[in-house]
Length: 273
Image (tube, rainbow, N blue to C red; front, side):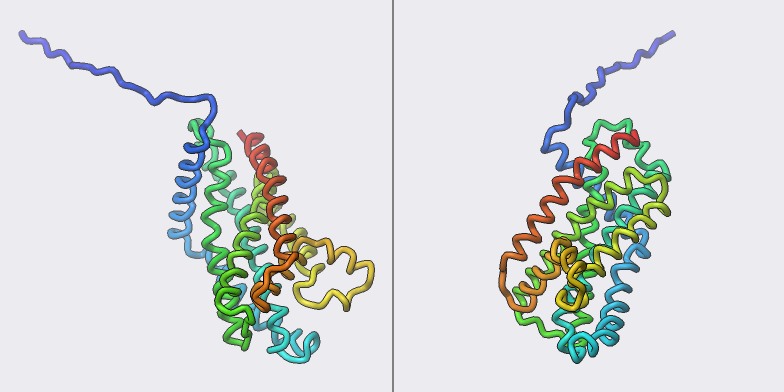
């Protein structure tokens, strides 16, 4: 009788560290970005908001308010297009938070609890992937505007600079809704709160009408509204091809939003674990 013995080799497990290194954090963020992109590819309905909103809102606002505000649609477009860009970016940011909350409700993030991964990676990955959605919305809005008669004075470089600025602004503002996604109890509740944030910020700004036409008490709020600074920066870059102080203020506001809401979003995410 012959006895067979298996030649067992010791299995070497990867060494786990108490803290994830910055290099490993970056690699995990890219992995989560790839996961979010795969999810977008399999759910094309996620692109409905970034495609339909520019196609609907740009002609609607242009033809309704153009004559009353600027005396004609073509004269109104240099004021309107930057406003539409910012409004579309804000709406897309809201979808970022809602999608995150839905993933949490489905238990997707429960699987991440047992993995030795950075806590910021599951939040930052979808935020990076959503820059593609911001880019699609930006290109469509500019294309519709040009088809309606918008002729940006900044030329190609001005349009590219404005597009990059609105993508940076949208990415930074998405952290506000990511934070809300980690603290709200349901996607429906988050959507309601987000609309309450979205509409005052957008309409109580200089996005659609000149600030001088508003009451004095309202002008005080409009002038400090960060959306007004982003809209003014987009107008100077796209319409005039100049980089003025408003561009600087817009970038400072974006940096401040990231500095405040990234730690808050990570803290809210840890509370869910």
